[in-house]
Image 1 (cartoon, rainbow, N blue to C red):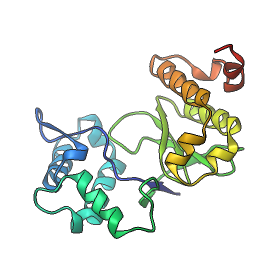
Image 2 (cartoon, helix red, strand yellow):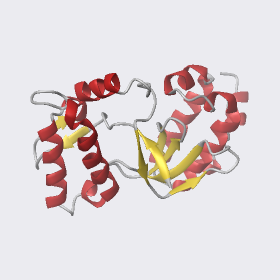
Image 3 (cartoon, one colour):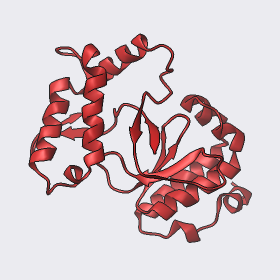
Amino acid sequence: MKLRRNFDLHGVFALDAERRIARRRARIEHQEEAIAYAERHPEEESSHRKDWLMLLRDEIVLLRPYWGAGITKEEAVRAWHVANPDIPSGFATHFVEVEAINVEETDGIFFVHESLSDAPGWSLTHEPTGFLVVRVPKGDGAHYIGEEIYHAAPEAWKLTDAEAIKQALPPLVHRWVKEMHTAAWQGINICALPDYQAFAREPW
């Protein structure tokens, strides 16, 4: 299926065994160099993620008209949005084909899929905006989080602007997701932990 996807401005690119550069500060030749390095080293984690390399190539095609000499990726993305005013900066910019699982009982709002970046794990994606809600080691954990947070604030999740959603969500939703994320990466089975409703009843 197709999911919406934003330009990748987070984290760093590996240009070789030693050199790194923040993605938002990368020039177009840096992104091309990062792709080439990943392809030359299939033994490294990022090189196993063909979807991620495909996304980087797609980004270059979309951004090339705005990504001239000396221009950072962040500046190119900003210029892309100026040239495409019908797509707000908080909204996903393009579609990618991925294998994703619909999170039941969320009205098609949430999908779970393997990470589309060079990072490991499973992602919970908000389909209307394409923003990544959380990434955890296992798919069932991402699915669990999606079900819980949708029922915690269904009207907020139906909004189509990422920033508006963040503002509309109850603060405890942010806190619960953060705690689930931390626990998951510590190796804890988060599906066995108290659900959001139990968490919200605590005297915080």
